[in-house]
Image 1 (cartoon, rainbow, N blue to C red):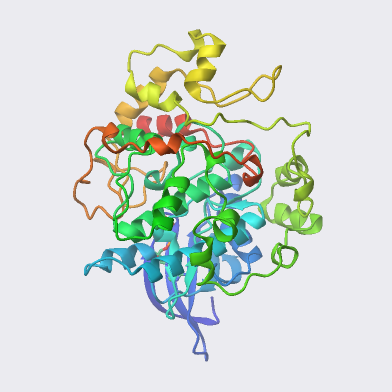
Image 2 (cartoon, rainbow, N blue to C red; image 1 turned 60 degrees about the horizontal axis):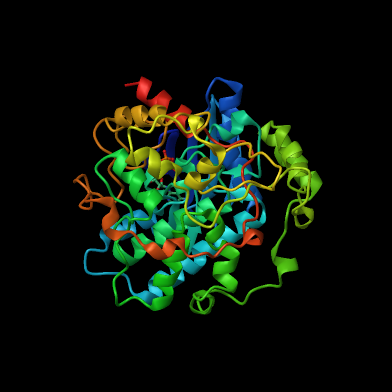
Length: 459
Ligand SMILES: Nc1ncnc2c1ncn2[C@@H]1O[C@H](COP(=O)(O)OP(=O)(O)OP(=O)(O)O)[C@@H](O)[C@H]1O
């Protein structure tokens, strides 16, 4: 701290503030994030996660890490200053018409490039949104705010720290299924949609309506003037089944849009050069810093740092499989308040209604059913949750009042709140499953219902 002069406070987040600083006797500008360290050990470890993960990233489209240190119960993270602000501000400022197609493609290509770097390292960002994507003075896009990120799978305590923003949360999260790299893809789809329309893809006046729209993929089509490739991409990024969504690697290399995106990126390095997965030692180092032995256990489950390609089908851990269609479970629950519980349903009916198939003929699926979470619980939670606000960047732990207002809602009611079937895109049900494209997923996932319950009881 001593070596830096504070120029101004840039803003305040839920965990602390961000300061613009300059090294004494220097010209450069940096952002110093000051985060109050929670007293509990697990909380402090969680706070350190952002520094640890950011330090491990090294990519032109990810906010560069410079240093981190602790003093007086605070964690300080020194990082690159992005003078162009965040994308959400930029979208809000765009009053005179839409962004040009070139701009959209350039920014989106850079976002994907940054996200690919993260996913190559088997890290999930988990809170990708326009507010966490920054612009430098020269217009380069940088992904930031790794406060919610996690590495591979992890122990329960770690996964429970999930913080998301409802407007960007994918159907599988609402359906209480594990988070994986495709959930980040969904969130990137939301940002792309915002760049194309200056609006959220899913808007609602209540939690229930928001979740319903997300699960049904009820979004208004992109404006006609945008190229067919963008329409096609959005459709795929908003597939209800994560397996049907392309990975960022696919988007950048073999999707219909790839050719348009590649024009905005430097020539691609060969895969071997590009992918620097963490070696076992690095994995240990990160684990030690995070204070998590579970990280190493997790790495063995998924093939280990640097050995990821060896993690394939047929291993001891059965891979969860999804049927081609979207999960009907959440929809059914939300649609029909009289449903008693799937517990009483024959297994065949449950499979059919949930859209989740078994792993193999004899295998029992371990998770992803409502069996343990009767629908009434979700319904009653949603009723209570509708009294809570999402404010700008609602997280499951934040308190407030009123309906969930998205960052682009400008304090007014979101316009779209009609019948959810209106803009249902039937083509979302088209099969496009590619198991190989789903690289990895969280092992112990955040329990949404516990989170909602905790939130509801606070009110
Ligand atoms: N590297 C950066 N360059 C420029 N501005 C930044 C940078 N990092 C953060 N900011 C800005 O600083 C402010 C505070 O950021 P911070 O990440 O602490 O909280 P937040 O993102 O607003 O909230 P939360 O983390 O609770 O979601 C935000 O306005 C953000 O846009």
